[in-house]
Length: 172
Image (cartoon, rainbow, N blue to C red):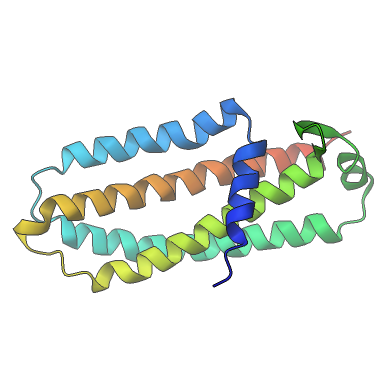
């Protein structure tokens, strides 16, 4: 199995700023916990998670296409702004490696695509789980909360990526 994508995920966590990390993970975690506690005793949760999974697949498919399009644009664009961000060092990972703004954008968009693909796979398997009995209420709630956590995480990462991309393109 090809597991090099783990290196990309590790790179993402090495280069992400603490503030961005908190925003990308803290708000989704709070929302997922709220969802979990609201639905602790909800025996009808499995039907809701099927709807969530179906909607998530559509959303994630669009986000994957968008993220890949931006990566392609970044790599193939030949503008002054893109050339300038290749020279701007934003992070020193260690004494041997620095990361330019261009590399940071590629890392964050690539990370986003990887997480989106993992979420698509996860959401494809949710309907096949037989968790619609009251005995599996807690398990269903945990699965739904984790799904919500990661979907919101991807959305927050995408918002940050789009904002960064916007400021790179309109830089005067």
